[in-house]
Image (cartoon, rainbow, N blue to C red; front, top):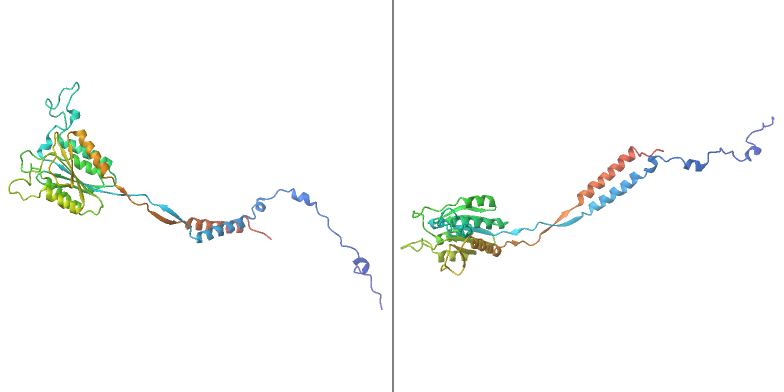
Length: 316
């Protein structure tokens, strides 16, 4: 039988340790510059964590309490202005009654001062300029009471309507003063309002002449004032003429005497202060804020997925 050939698998060879292949020094590898892929390799994971955090916060439905702009409880105001022929007199504008040196101007130049109506128009416009949020309407009256402008907050249009007022023809069929009729007509319009405060400001330079005529069936000031009291309408009556005297009026009508243009402006300022609009109670509403966090979370997850499958794709 032949002898077995020597084999490299013999005990002599197996007892020798395996040979190692020498590699370069590890510190040398550490000195090599790191690529941007290596530096940002954990960015997709960070974006996933951030995105999930935003989504969880969005699911909690975050809300904030937001204060709404505070509004005023507007007042419904009726301006009633006398346009009888006596309103054409030029004795209210004391600022223009004298020329330089103290010389009287009214007697020499009838056009040197404004008429009572013009003074009343300017004072009413000044009153309008101080109001905000109110609905204001306008009527003119002499023999009849005519609605010129319904309730409006368009003050520019109302000022234009005020400037169109003209006195009726002297001794004509309309040249009377129906104060009671004007109050009743104003109350008829104001009673339709749902406002908490309703005010009538009536300006006249004379006394009631319509309801005091013999056998007259026109409404009196007392009757009209009672109607206003039932409807919750406050009345301010301004007697606008020099040396004006107090009229005999019902107790629910507050009367002012305007001796000149400056005095009339002061009266309107006083009424403006008395009839300030009340502020509503502060109002709030809850506003949801989950949408920005939801969108941010979805965007973070999308970017993480995009980076992981393109620029920062992991390779084996």
